[in-house]
Amino acid sequence: IARNFSSSSAVQSAIKHVTVIGGGLMGSGIAQVAAQAGQNVTLVDVSSDVLAKSQKSIGNNLGRVAKKMYKDNPKEGEKFVSEALGRIKTATDPVEAAKATDLVVEAIVENLQVKHKLFSQLDAAAPAHTIFASNTSSLSINEIASAVKRKDKFGGLHFFNPVPVMKLLEVIRGADTSDMTYQTMMQWGKEVGKTCITCKDTPGFVVNRLLVPYVAEAIRLYERGDASARDIDIAMKLGAGYPMGPLELADYVGLDTNKFILDGWHKKYPQEQLFKPIPLLNKLVSEGKLGIKSGEGIYKYDKK
Ligand code: NAI
Image 1 (cartoon, protein in one colour):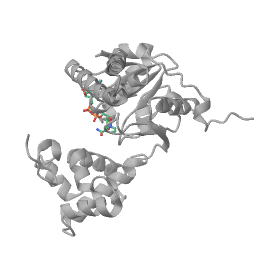
Image 2: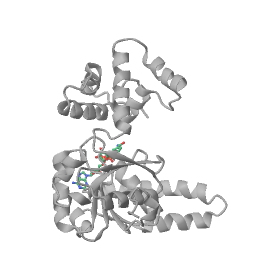
Image 3: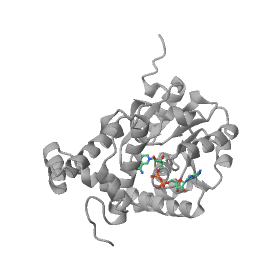
Image 4: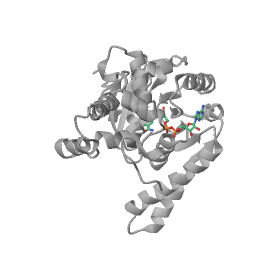
């Protein structure tokens, strides 16, 4: 009988040590879920200030998890937190960190050139068996992988914000990702507590390919004056059962991020109507109205 590669439970993940590069919003969450699952982690960032902040927020998050998990046994809870934290080392040199690791998950700035530079350096330093993965939201996995020789050991691991809470992991098979690499990524995703889906290397994979044009259409509808912002959000919450309205979501994600993704896709696929620029979105971003983080976007927020 041919080996059934679609059954991931048959394959033991060979990942014992993971290096997460980029200690920001996503990287710190990825480091946390891996450490929580018993893996040894090195979290790398160019900034040691970022690393200090990440460690603090991971500690706080783990504390909250422990409170729930060990309601009646705070001592066990404390042990859980200190053991998980103890599995996370921090470093500022990605190349040094990659010399002894089974998996690299990259979560640095969303810029192809910067990712290329990082991966080509890692490719020269990491052991032959090490798998490389990018957490990119909007870039092509194949294009990122073009910087390395180990194209068979390259794929996408796309997490969602906030990583410890969101249950989905999109596993992206690039054009050259081997079956073994794909299976290992699926198994690892399961081990860190996520439900994995398989995606091809297409813009936005599954979630953002549906979500980004949906949010864009909501901004266009509002721009045309067809309904008020409040009513559009109420409509999708009460009429479609979504937990957040599309315009609230746009402000939450950041209007600059929405624009960045749309612009990148529009440049690559100029014929696709769904990716066309939105004058209102461009105007708000140029005025510094970026959403919740800047105090105003589609909506106004009370400054803390
Ligand atoms: P962030 O800005 O919070 O963190 C990025 C971190 O990378 C920063 O701390 C920065 O100091 C560090 N960094 C930059 N260049 C570096 C380098 N060469 N070596 C080491 N560290 C470096 O960004 P965020 O939001 O965590 O996003 C990271 C990646 O994850 C991006 O590719 C983004 O597309 C993707 N992503 C973001 C999501 C989100 O909701 N923010 C969701 C899913 C994926």
